[in-house]
Length: 357
Image (cartoon, rainbow, N blue to C red):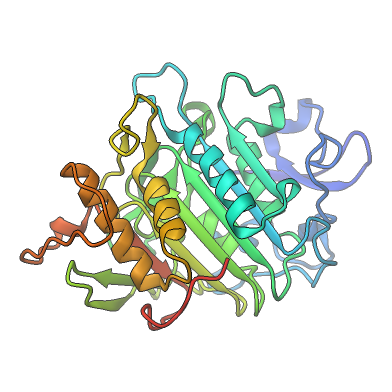
């Protein structure tokens, strides 16, 4: 996307804006009522271009902003995005429900302050234009999440909606496809690729900070473009796959830990169903199973969480529930394409590392 330098029409803060915005009145996030961001670091003298920062410029040449003051929203922050896509043919039923459930869980179970959670949905009752999950608003929310991130911060990114696969044009994907998420206006504004998501919320993470991403969508296995993918069979045995690609450059963090729990593999589908509740209200299988497993068993390790989530989902499919339900069958690649996946910025023992959010 072609960009230019501009200034907020209200506070005169320097900004990077689309080239076509010459004839449009532009305001920065702060003046629009969006939580305050620090001055635009891409305009620092001699700083690399917008393309370099977001990974579309010179290989391995990434610019990280200088350390900012800590976020005024505390060391626990979350961005929750749920899109049902209105009355379209491909509409969903449970995505908005998912983010309401996730917010309740974060506040009441994990101690996240209410005002440190940004929730974007296409709920017809939503009146705040900045809380509609357009491509622009989703980009701003991701920037807000990592702004001022420091050691000790715990960040959560949750997306429930449609995912997609897009032909990889810069040849940095092993399977030849980028993963993408679909904002509510994706038909006109386009999708958000995993390359951009990685550059925005993964690479800025400093040492001591932690990001958990929960992605309840199709084709989401390597959604964050993290270097390592955990492969686990139904007997609980696992191994780490190295997804680093020589053409991709560095896609890890600045020392922090980024983890992604996704609904399925890159060639799998996610479920939007009422099977869990037994009533008409639909929820995403990943979101439901994650919250259920975390509530049922305190001090979970990542390995136990993944096994529990998969067991809950299998139980719902077969009309049975419970964490002890196990199905031991022959391992096949396709068998696991539709089950919860874990990827990470670093390898670790998933059965000894406890989940701390």
